Image 1 (cartoon, helix red, strand yellow):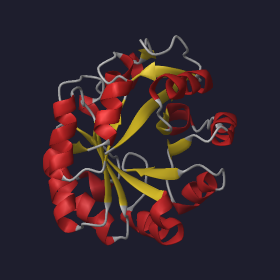
Image 2 (cartoon, one colour):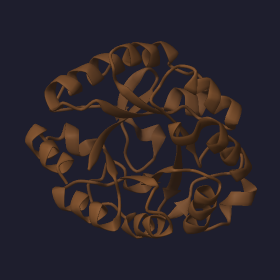
Image 3 (cartoon, one colour):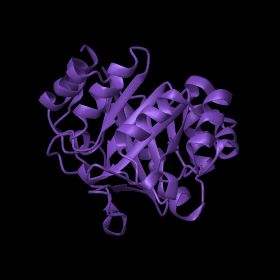
Image 4 (cartoon, rainbow, N blue to C red):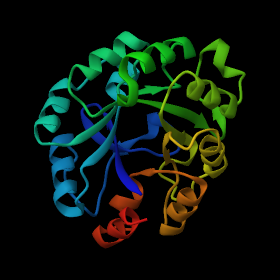
Amino acid sequence: MRVIAAIDILNGQVVRGLSGIRESYKPLISKVTKAIAPFELIMEMREALGITDFYIADLDAILAGQKNERLYSSLVKEGIKIYLDAGSKNCADLQYLMSLNVFKVVAGLETIESIRELKFAAQMLGSRLVFSLDMKEGVPFTTREELVLKSPQSIMMEAINAGVDHLFILDLAKVGTGKGASTDNLVAKARGQSEEIFIMAGGGIGSFQDVISLKTSGANAVVVSSALHDGTFDRETLKLISAL
């Protein structure tokens, strides 16, 4: 089971995501590092925990269109595998991010214009593309009229049928709570649809048992943050998770 560390960047600093209420996000307080500058924090996390995969939600880009491109470049040079959500709306946006040599680019339900654009991106980018099924309290997190009334399962199946082979299932309302993931059922449904798809799950993961549950449902990777910074998932625990 792969462990991917989630990093939320707002106003150029790493912040602690909590329930997707972004106006309340505060600078991160961590037992792993004292840094809040993204580059230094990620380097110190790699040193302390051995993590090289980082899911970066660049809220400066998502909310204001201000991409932290210098950061991406610096991390790529250090060999960090970046899964980058920078508010892409269409295939052209995703192709641009791919040109920055990040590991994976993320098309989030929150910002992608349509399933049609997602299909174009899947055709152009293949396995370099991740579709993030963004939800809040189990409801699709999108303003797109053609998507907002659909169920998460329906949108997920459309994405898979459009050619997406990397899927991130995320409930933002659970982020930072450590109360357990609520996405097991959707993970199982995605796995039932395809044995080949790579499934990432996140939001609320706070214990080793949460990871076991998601693994049993069919997830290939967990995306975690608070459990790393509060010391729940230390280096030894991460080794156990990686061995699953």
